[in-house]
Length: 168
Image 1 (cartoon, helix red, strand yellow):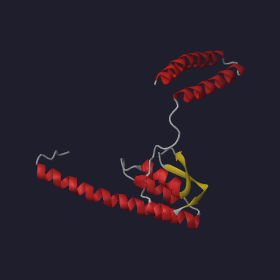
Image 2 (tube, helix red, strand yellow):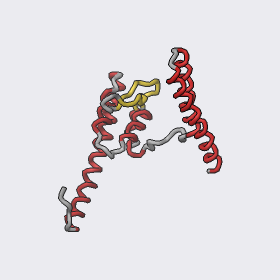
Image 3 (cartoon, one colour):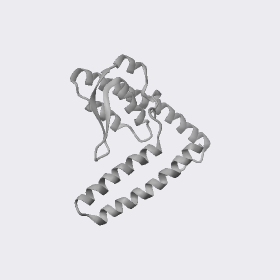
Image 4 (cartoon, helix red, strand yellow):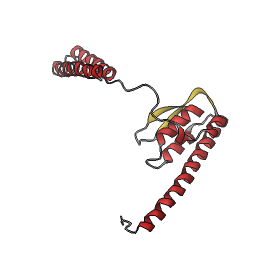
């Protein structure tokens, strides 16, 4: 990579980035709206996923996912082994007119429940307790003891996390 050392050249590049970025955002929004139209006509959500998967890194793909869920009649179903976004059709109606008026970049991608570390620890503890019980039933004593040890450690950690949460 060649570093730009002349200020005027750097300012010119920044201006170009701004223009291309706005154009790209507009193209992505148009593609998302068109893919939602396609989904409403053909009950096919694959083009919505293709738009999101085509987005460059740093281009607010999570906001596009949120937009698709809000206006596209789809639910985000995770990523496959190749890290490609997947959607499922949902019972939510397609709201194309509203989607056209709401650019994807205006969506807040991190909406929803706040992260609850205590709740997450409780879930992990339950999983490990089930695995320990299953290992015991299968006669895998060493595995069961290992899981029980992990559960004990996590329960101690859970107490510390609860104290921190209460203090905050």
